[in-house]
Image (cartoon, rainbow, N blue to C red):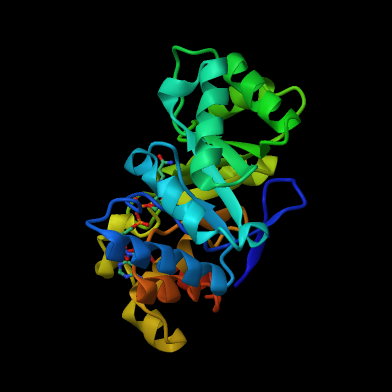
Length: 268
Ligand code: NAP
């Protein structure tokens, strides 16, 4: 596994993290146990970044993550998110306390605003985020689905802390962040956390040259994940509840393609 500096902090997170949307949705104990095992397998393979949110599966995603990391807490960097309807000061604090309980931990490594909410002043939300940092409940502050302009406002609303990341959709089939958000992150020392990096499982085979798969003995999924993290400012959080898929995803950054090959990927 390869690790990258988170923002301008001294923290290193795995280039391949794990997402958990739909983790926590299960038909019974055996499916839940498989989800826990998939996360544990990822950690075993060197993944230290797990992304979750209070919103996922009505809180059960955080509960499953909490179970998976119970004996491994210090090996893992937990990123969770506060929902856009909970961005008033006291709601942020209450949401964080609930997430801490579900995650069975004393602190969240990265607490992110899930989506911007223009009806609540960003200053109010960020003052709560900084209070959580002061109390030791949160280590770093991030945002998600923020435009460059919203990110600038968020940074200006943080007098005592650095904003370390922006989590946005980024994959071979959605490259919208390449025009503004990615260059901004690269220039200003923020990590771009790429969500839905596998285009939600809809594998766009036509965008992936077979010759590259053959030359490097990698699968199309591995090409997708490798490609999306070709900038050192990006880490990705593919979701999988399948142990074999987790193994495939975690070894996707074991090789590096040439600049020319990266340019060929995504063309059709
Ligand atoms: P994704 O990671 O692009 O794709 C997940 C889908 O791909 C699942 O159906 C998964 O099925 C399948 N998959 C994973 N590895 C595979 C493999 N090796 N081979 C074949 N299929 C594979 O989509 P996502 O869940 O939307 O995004 C990832 C994470 O980003 C989320 O879980 C969440 O943490 C975060 N996210 C954040 C936001 C936001 O607003 N901030 C929005 C969406 C997502 P299996 O489980 O069966 O492997």
